[in-house]
Structure formats: structure tokens, C-alpha cells
Image (cartoon, rainbow over all chains, first blue to last red; front, side, top):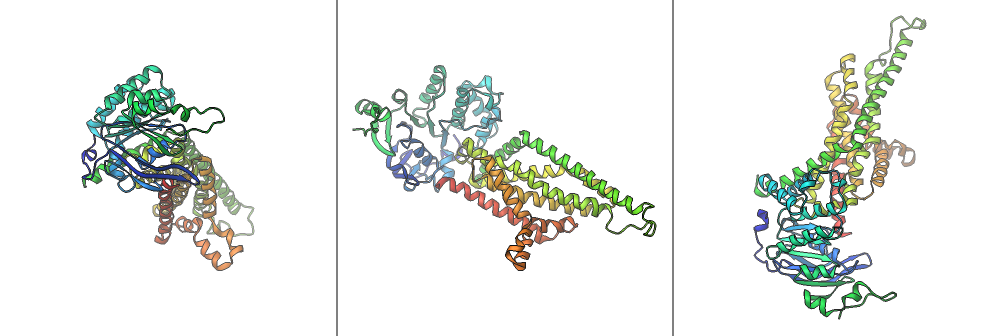
Length: 254
Length: 270
């Protein structure tokens, strides 16, 4: 954990707190008055079909996008006005791996560590740990662009975990991985429980059930369900959200 | 250095190093470096060939109407080879530099790695600073490749080192100006092709506003001509370093840096 990340905001409560958070792209309302709170150390699932607003919410939390209305804070810090504090606490792996294909795996991880403020022995140790954790040691000298999609996905996840951030955001972390490495990633996410706050974006309900304590379900940018994972997944007709019948509009969750 | 400043220096250094690694590791880099070397050599020998022909005409016995051995003042290595070579090299930079700059921001956007950078400890200012300085360093290396032939003019034509230094300072200023335009264009698109074409268009217009004089009248035409890269570079190519010209190129770079910085904010609100 970086030094800056160990400093806490006196106003801190929730790890992530969104209040009336909205984002519009032209005429399209991608996120509509979302309010939710994620507690420190919690494994939180963000569910929804494609276009539900999951990625927009994540980008508002990371500060990559600015909200059109409402606020969001990370450990009490605003991504809009205190981006440096937020980024010191953040590890993020997008669904599509954001990598530099011309770098070698180890070189990329070193770069990712350095832009998160790691250096010297701490950087060496973090890279070695990440290579081992995600079973990348044998590929450490390979060029990222020459790797298979599954390997690239693991490199992307490794960079997010590298600096052991207090807040981890992972978007579809097991997509593109073979069953063996899906389990490796799930184990890492289970290990993170308690110590790190994890936001897991997925439309795999089974994965959400196995890895999260609470979930929020988004539909067309609105929060339609929020609660303990088992309660939400067992009590709501989520299938209609994710797999509407032919000709049927995606339904609201009761 | 404060802890916060020290904390920012490492990510900044890492990005600067990565940019250099990507710039010098790409085939485009070596193609452009080779191209500059070849073009300089071809231009140099072509100007030298013409100079030798002119010299031959003036000195040959066929020039019976002239006093033997008289060669006009303007027929010398400086005016016939060195100055035109440098002027042509400045135009050549317009064709080359956008090829280097087109990927710098556009590639980050198309790969999505801008999100990686913008959610790290790097501030948008850090990203712009690292990318601009790394690109400026590359274009400086690009100019160094062209150095050998003009340098022979210093040895053979008695051209002063000061003159050579002034011309290369001017070339560097032109290259920095074109690179800045190219980087600003690259920051507004995810397409390297669009980045390159828009940089070519703007750089060609900026290089010489002389074409606008017939349309805007002589007074405004004169003002526009003074805003041309060519007009500003010509004083350098004469061996003069006029602070106003250097400030002009720094101003172009500053405007482009500000536009690029604005583009990173635009991504967040678009």
C-alpha cells in the first residue's frame, strides 16, 4: 500500500459513496441519480446487462469521466477535485486489457508500478509477487502483444493488484480466461476480501454469487436492486434483465 | 524537493522513459531517421552538383565575355549549397515529423491506455509534459542525423560554427513547432491517420502564409507573412538568432501544449 493511500480523510466513512450520481452522453442518460455506499473491505458486485451503466459508474469513480450531476467519493476524496488522493487508493482492470503491446510483461508491470508511485525494492517485490500470483513468471520476458488474450487479461489484472490498493475495481475479470486461470483469479479476489474493497463488475450471476457479499443491479442507468448477494440473486427475476424474451423490452426488477 | 513533488517525479520519469522506448523501438522511428539521412544526403549532393555546374560555367574558357577568374559573390558554397539545403530540410520536416507524432496520443486513445494513465498517479499535466519532451528529444535526434553534410560546409566553405549553430537552432525550432502541432492533432482523435493528415494540413498552412496575401490585402498579408514558419526560420538560416523568432516558435509550442492539455479534460466531459 502506498504512503499516500495510508493517509485517511477525516470525513471518511464509506469506501465509495455515490449520491445522486448521473452521467449523460448527449441525449443518452447513461447513469441516472445513482446513490449507493460501499463499505471498506467489502466485496461488492455491480450487475447489469451491456449498456446498463456499469462502466460509466466505474469511470466516474476513477475520475476518468466527470459526472453531469451528483457526487461520488472514494475514502471521502472526490475524483473530480482530489484525483491524486483517489488514484493513490485505486487499482483498476478494465474488461478489455489496457496494455502496451510493444513492452515485455515484466517491463509493463514495472511501468504500471512506477506510475502508481512504486520504486526500488518495493517495486521489485511487487512485480515478483504479481508475476507469481497470476502465474505469469514463465511469460515475464515475453512481448505483451505476442501473448494470448487470456495471458493479456492476467497481465491487466496483475497491474491492478500490483500496488495493493485499498480499492480494487475489476471489470469482467475472468472473461477470456480458461477455467484453470478463472479459478486463479477468483482465488486472488477471495484473498482480497476483508483487506481490500473490491468492486466486481460482471454479468455472470454465478461469479457474483461466489465472490461478492452485496450487489447492485443496474438497468438503463438506474439502480433497480441493492442488497445482500443471495437476497438479490434469489429474490429478483434477473433473468428477464439479462435475457429478455424475443421482442420483449428488458424488464424492471421487482 | 517536497515529498509530494518527489512522489510525482517517479511516475513522470517512468512515462518519459516509456515514451522514448516506444518512439525508438518503433519501425517508423528508424524509417524516419533513415529517410532524413538519405534526403539530406541527396539534397546536399544535388545542390553541390548544381553549384559545381554554375562554378564550371563561370570559370570555363567558354565565358569569354567575362573577365577571367571572376565569379559573382553569390556563387559560393554558403549561398548555393548550405542555405538552400537547410531551407529544403525545414520543409522536409513537415513531411516527416507528423509521422512521428501521429501515434503519441491517438494510439493511447485507440488502445484505451489513456484510461490507465489518467487513473494513475500521473496528472494530465505530467502526461502532456512527458510526451511532449520525449517527442522533442526524438526530433532533436532526427536533426542530428542530418548534421554531417551541413557540417562539411563549415569545414569546406569557411562557414562559421556560429552560423551552423544558428541554422540548427532554427531547424530545431521549426521541428518543435511542427511536432507541437502534430501532438495537438494526435490528442483529439483515436485515429493516427486523421492525426497525421490534420497535422500535415496545419503545418503546410503555417509554414508559409504567403499564399493568403492576394486574398487579404497587402497589410494583413504582411502580418500573416510574419507569422509564417518560413519567415521566422529564414533569419536563422542567415545565421542570425533573433529572440522574437525564438519566442514565436516557443509560443506555437505553448499554444499547442495548452490545446493538448485541454483535450485531456475534454475526454472527461465529452
